[in-house]
Image (cartoon, rainbow, N blue to C red):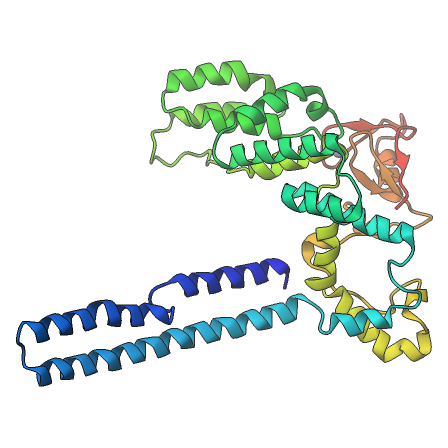
Length: 382
Ligand SMILES: [Zn+2]
């Protein structure tokens, strides 16, 4: 459960509130505007009053039912929102924090300052400039103007990509060509951007011209020929080269952050997500209650006495499992990075090296064509 579930529930609630059928005022307005007006007109034009009143009574009864139905939907959604909030946030956060108050949290000026900076950075990253201004005023901190320029550029280009305009993104990729092409893992972004433009051409000749100018440079690494020949297939015909939709905005964001040395994700969001959706805070609180007597003050724990289940996208490994032997690496069998940046265990590397004997030829990476000699393999420390 995360804060996004809460926002989704809130949005649904807002939709209900403004929908005519479920807002309590909708059926009542209809009653007042339509039925009462009609009844008045009919009375004035000489219809039998008893008849008109009976009809009006029926209309009122019907409206009452509709109001009740609307309210029921409203209350059920409201109840759901409450449950979502409970799940997204640890219960009784205030009581929880007092248990962690020894020593008090964020009381040191340096800790307070660090917290303020993380919040300010998060607001800036999201482009919430009004909130940044208010926060700056309250804390006396200043959001770095250069970072602001970059964050604004990132938001502008991402929203252009989302709107289907790739011009700025392509210009940015061109400007940072060398960085994007550099190893060990060159970015797919420039090719993917040009690929998306190529696929917009309806005219084969123009498409081919575009491919010549922008795509053929990627021939050795990418499926350029498959892509270019895909335009030979008539629309509707089943092409053997299906359109692989790439999340261009996300790719751009990743490379942009990488270029400027920013974390790929907003650090504050990661922390909040792990504490709430990941359930870390709940698990720690449970352990504190159960084992607090034995383990002492929670603030002095150096490691957690239990597993904290984390969502898939947030699993961070302090251990490394060799993709070749499927064994966990150890001090005596440590992880080794090959020239290409791929990593395998030392034992796996040595076995592959032995296969090339007696000349002790370099080892070909199990994942890519690059070769690495015994001297070039580098030990990694996690
Ligand atoms: Zn490799």
